[in-house]
Amino acid sequence: MYEYGSGGSDPEKRSSSEYRYSGPFYQDNIGSGSSRSTIGEVKVKEKKKSFPRLLMKVVCVALVFGIVASAAFQATNYAGAKLRGEDAKTAVNEEPSVLPEVEATIPQIGGESQKPSGDVISIVQQCMPSLVAITNVSIREVESFWGFGWYNMPQQREQTSTGTGIVIGQNETELLIVTNNHVIAGATNLTVLFSVDEGKDGASAVEAQIKGTDAGKDVGVIAVPLKDIPPETLSEIKVATIGDSSQLMVGEQVVAIGNALGYGQSVTTGIISALNRDVTLQNDDGSLINNSLIQTDAAINPGNSGGALLNMKGEVIGINEAKYSANQVEGVGYAIPISDVEGIIGDLKTMTNRPEVDAEDMGYLGITCQDVTEEISKQYDMPVGIYLKSVVSGCAADKAGLKKGDIITRFDGIGVSSYDSLRDRLQYYAAGETVEVTVMSSENGEYMEKTVTLTLNSKEEVEAAS
Image (cartoon, rainbow, N blue to C red; front, top):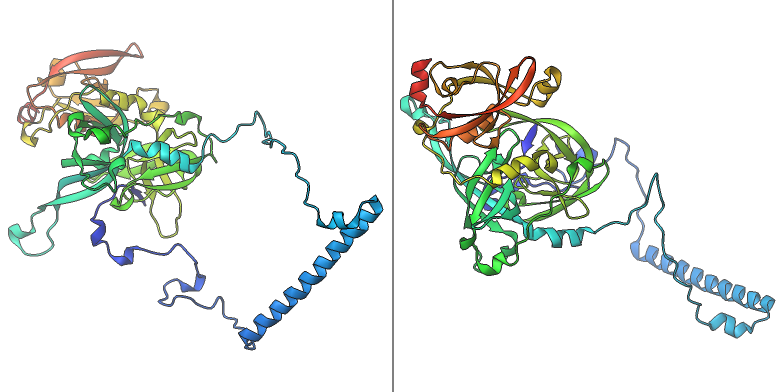
């Protein structure tokens, strides 16, 4: 099964049974409590030998070989010198001549050769200051499996999870960080610890706010007020360099950095194993998202979600997201191609910070809808977005002139590609607020873009009109 790479539990409370050595592996040891087992059924009985006697024999043989080899070497030099007319003593004892240095060339295979632009150590030193560890405190509903009556009702429990973020810029008042939506989803309290502060005495996490998310693409941007960051920390932080994931090739070397297991930033290396892998992931609320991802054999562990997948130039070419989790699978991790979400991240960066509204106050459009995925878009030549299956008469969408068949593509200036991403946006807007919505509307067989202004309804108003 696929699993998000984000973390979860307190590292100090982990069971030792979760840890396994990566090798050596003994085939017959599967399910066995022993540390080693005989390979196969054939057992060879060997005569025991005295180790000291064996060691003396080896030493003696080595000495004899050395003497003979040395004599042969000297004799060869002596004979060669005589043939060349040189003094034999000089030929045997002189220092070897130093060969002139020859500039190495890189073989050209199918095109112009390129020298490596960096090594792992320099890439880590360059990029580590752009990484942060994220801690998300949220409230989750858990089922009660004991008692009777009201005791069996779902219980709310505080839960702490960890992930990673990448510093992507700043505005006049905030430092901006991109991560996965699932790393920050449902946060009641969100804090970041800058990698430049890891291990420093007195260093502490700084509170962050969510600027915006796109659940369909599993990306989100959070902001930290500049005034809350100590000046010495701010002076060491670096903004990540964004690369071009559309130019990636299978076999390229990559470096992954992330807050693995919540222990702090760690580094893994690997290659691009495959491109454009269709991967379906399930959110905590049961909703599914499907995206085309980069596959890598660089380890993507719990807590790595939201971290950087870097090329050998130190450029971010992916946002680490998930791994394939199965006993028989090794080294199958996934990252979101940065070029696929760069526009979305740009939109989210410019958003005004909004607090999440209470569920009973949340605004509604008055629509039923269905996602137009990339696959559906190609098959039916439709824009990617949210297809309106019906519009509730007298409600916000209807009053703004939206109709069945329209496809919503933007909400309040932010791109939305699925119902999940629209619902994620709506939780920051209260009933009665006025927003702009962009739709693609079919006219004479062609889709035309239009933007309308509408006032959001309450849930009660929509239900009454339905």
